[in-house]
Every structure is written in C-alpha cells, then in structure tokens.
Image (cartoon, rainbow, N blue to C red; front, side, top):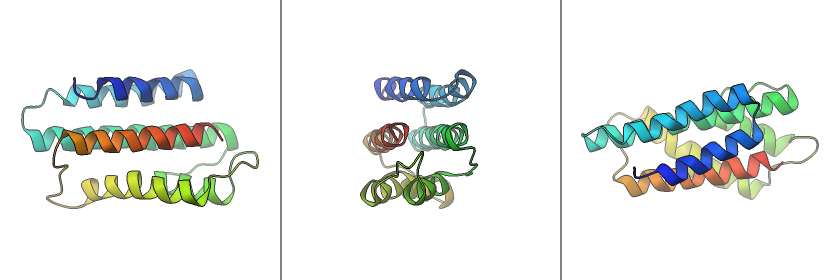
Length: 143
C-alpha cells in the first residue's frame, strides 16, 4: 500500500498519546486510508484518503485536548487556535507551528472536503498531507 508506513507512524502516535479506546477509534479511521488504496478510480481514492485521514486527525486532536484539558473543540482549526492561545498546562503551540499546521493540514483538507471538483492531483499530494498531519500530531502530542 502506498501510504502504509506513514499510516503506521500516525497510528503509533495515537497509541502513545490517547487513551486506548480513543486510539482505537482514531486508528480504525487511519486504517481506512490504506483500505481506500484499493479503490480503482484515482480521484475517488485520493479523496477518500484525504477524508479518512482528516477524520482521524480531527478526532485524535479533539480527544487529546479533551483528555488533557477537558476542553471540547470540534475541528482542527478550533484545536490549533486553542493550543496557540491557551495551550496545555501552560505549553502553547508557537505561532509559526500554528500557521504551518493551519496552512498544510487544515486549509488543504478544507479545500478537498468543501470545494466541488477539488481532488488531490496524485498520491504524492496525499503523502504530503499525511506528512503534515504527522508533524501536527507530533507537535501537539508533545505539548
């Protein structure tokens, strides 16, 4: 599978940072990314990979923040803004990292999820998004 190593790395991050039940939910969604690799129509495959990985990261970030701070934010933008402004136990996400994750994860995801006719051009574009998600989870889970 094209993204297996990256998905395995993302799943490992979730296992290390989330309670077991939450990690299971997030990792089941990440697993759907690799399952989407079986879809023959490329545009549909790439879009499914973006959607499933986006659902996984949104849920992972939401549950991590709730577990650590008892704060509920529904999407990556809300979580990142909270982490930039308030942080976890006084540890805040730097403006630079906030901007990077907003640009490379949230905006990319929003483009594909909310714009009719928008599809990743190729597997490399999906891999770049997965790399950005890895960086985002690594930064947030280390706060």
